[in-house]
Length: 240
Image (cartoon, rainbow, N blue to C red; front, side, top):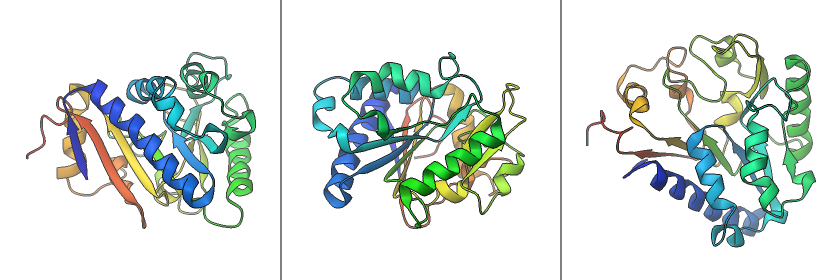
């Protein structure tokens, strides 16, 4: 399903409200809410809204568990760290228990960090295949998702849940969840805003299926829901 909003601010608000609604549903059903978040400007704006009333008061933060879709292999204090910005705009501003924050240890060697995060997921989800209640993804201008870039060998991974990426476009090593895990989520929501994303969004929907060229095309939930929250500039090249 695609929902088109007037601008990026409206997309951020819709994402924040989706977080609140999915948290309430999951907590009522299983007594906890597991969400995996991505970096980027639009998620950041959504989490700024979540950190303030009235939305912040509608979430039972003691039962929320935050995970990351991907992370750069940098220190948690580095400006490029996805953990750092999430902590600054949201986690330090709400009453979430520290043990409910499950960060990727980007300061470790990539392979060590990936293996450690796989263990973190196994411990949280038990023997079941990890199934997040909500997965928030962005869309790169080249069609990439998480730290899964066009042509990356990690796109072919079918068994591991977490892998290292040692050749990303910015030269940084990264750790990322794989599509094998992402596609198990109860709900996957893409947040896409801005005219610079218009061509990529169009290509994902109209080009022939080739996830190695357009990684976003690999996102096809097994039994969950797929939702696209996009603004009008990003949707400009899509037909009605």
